[in-house]
Length: 440
Image 1 (cartoon, rainbow, N blue to C red):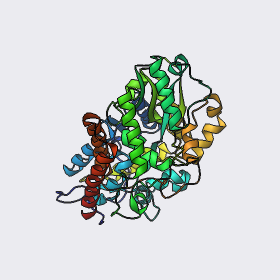
Image 2: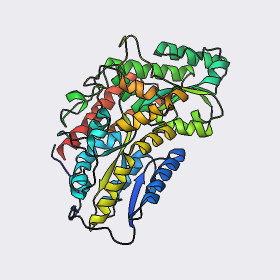
Image 3: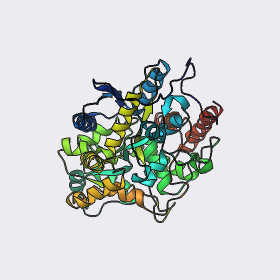
Image 4: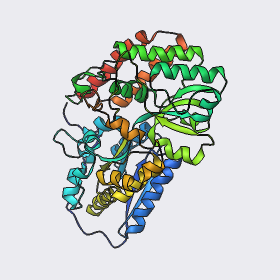
């Protein structure tokens, strides 16, 4: 695949000018993000700290909707010549940004051109590598990194007579727990999920060491082919379809829209990002716990690592964007990577620290000792061995592929079709998306 521009109709691309001294008045830096609710409040607080720490730049965070909406808005704005200075792009949008050519300024290039030090070695390798180019240089800046974990409503578990000291670890145990919750009417929704594809296809594949797509899940080149019609995916989706019919699982929608059901205590078991911890602390009126994703013992005897989700930050170009503006972006990026800011953000949100020093500060402060379970995501990400199937996924058109898979899942619920039939069709449609992306 040729490195391309996301502005297919652009007349000309903006280039990074030579650096110059910032103007006397503060330089405004726009930052489009996809962090709602409590997460957005933390982004605002972190940014306010940066703004107060110096007088040359003012970063203005703007919530632009869910991840997919933010990416779409960013692309549209760049085509119109009005791109934000910084865009938060979710993990599966990485291939799109990597191919964006003159629309973005890689972190490595930004640091070199502005003279602002952003040390790639300060970032955790597995996180940095996900947003790095093939030569290892940083493209996007790791920001809010997370993984999917299983969230449990301990009040519902206790009411159902389940042992809250021995949490379920396998899928048969999870199904049994959901049945107990339904039988005792301990929660209106025994089991649910946010992020359906991320949780039950991408993460499922990783911890079971199952190929999601050929060519090392797309890291080996743009001409990968999906493997989602393989037996492990079929059996897992069929398990969830059967659970839906039994009334012990409820599909509530895409992305993070179902999350509020767990926040409100209406669900006994929920699959969601580790990054919802801050919201739970703020709003939950019930006892909760994070647990490792369940595994299927018929597929693997000992699960391995899950993969990074969340998002990175990308420096965007625009016509006539000044040297001072690019330097402001770099200064903000460097500020976010300071140990106290990385650690503080991880503690207040539930996202994992993205730098070595941030993690060490979390440890030395006693955060994990004082908050049992807060390190579940880190431990799940760190399980060994990491393989080509648990490194991550980098496929062109991955946001569309998620939609295709979720539409197939929804279609199976509505029609009663089997998992095998809908996933065979989804694989064909998804392969077409990858092929089209590789040609551009």
